[in-house]
Image (cartoon, rainbow over all chains, first blue to last red; front, side):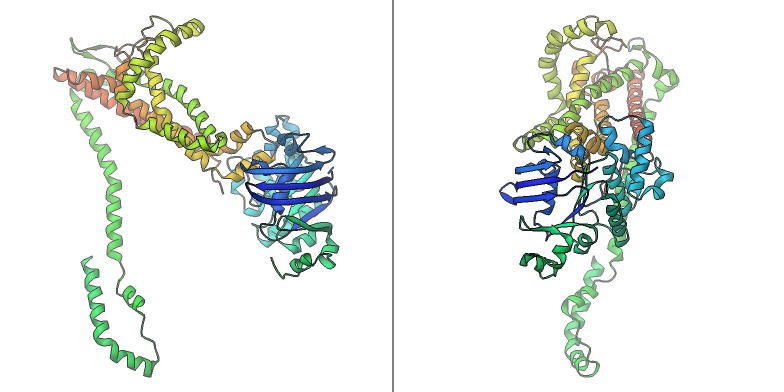
Length: 252
Length: 352
């Protein structure tokens, strides 16, 4: 089951570049929350702060509080602990090319020392089914490598890999931006299926995508959260003029 | 080249004499505009097929010269060692006798010495080199990175005779007085570290070889590891990996073919290394279990006995040692490549 996320006064920097300015956000549990905004507005940086991936960049700094469930992830937990609870899917599919499909999905559990073969088999099948890839790959789980799949299949494999560790939160950083429309539709269906069990935060460039999959939407501009409300409200009756300009295509 | 020049001139002449009148008719009747200067120049270049063919031929020649050189070396070695081959036959490679006085020769101690010292060197150098590469690519603070990388590569540029001298004056005394006694006390029961401790011997040769091949393995490994995309590291980190787990799963696993390749290159250098080994291995044609004992390697025996080979059979036997070295190098390389193929079969190392 997913948990909610409370973000309080979050600031992030890359060297001297102040990328996020005082973000406050309350992300509801078991919902899809979309983050939209023009390139470089800080939405990717924001999701990377939610699993402490931001700090893997050598010059990165962060301040403020992020609570996932009831844990303050910067004060009360190590990055490794947090990333075991918060799964992430990246913009470009990044399966492990030297591993089979099965090993790709099992990698997160094996990494943490999980060895029970029977349970692993079950988890791999369930994860691939949840990511709608099972029927396409079930006959060559051990034969094909993760890199031999098509782009859309690779991305669904990455989703299965993230789901296999049964995360409480799933972060998706433009998961469909490198994919064709058919694969994109599959990923969106998938997000729709998954939201009853996971808290999903999805960054997207595509406003229709946000409108289709998310209950809540946040609009970022130049490192600030301009507006955060129900998707319906954002797309039909935004409070802020800048939000309106963006969603009507006047800039960005 | 000449052909192209002539064509260019023709085009120039035609352009000068014909253009005013043609220009008028074109604009008046055909209404087709005069081709631009750039277009005329490019049209005058012809098909360039000759240049392409010449280039292709030259490159092919470069490539095939490799086959020529290898074939030449092999035939020369076989011809020059004919006398020894006729006298001892295949047994030459399995005999332990090396007695120039009575003209009785066998290559086994040298083959053993070359292989043992080289694998000993790999055993020491590979973990060190990979550790160094991991530190340099994944953990090193920026200000330390280039000096460390520079010094590692500097090690590769030092002539081997300098390594040999350093080994005699620094490494051998250290081994004799500090390292060997400890090894004898703790691991003496294995039989690998026992017997008289001269300092000079198989262990010294292995250590100096390890230092010599460390930079090659390390800098190539670093190169391959750097080329692993950052997205692979992120993928592992996002699953909740520690730094070592990330390096193992996201970096080393993806770079393994390149790393094995760099180890093979290091092994190649160790097998053929002559000067430094000759200076510290002890130069005694014997096979001993203890690594403290002196030995001899194929390259070392050729280098140190070639000048004193007084009769034809002696010379021929040394040539056959050269042939043995040639064969051993090829076999070891082939085996290593086979190993890479077997390990990576079925899982392509493609990284998007």
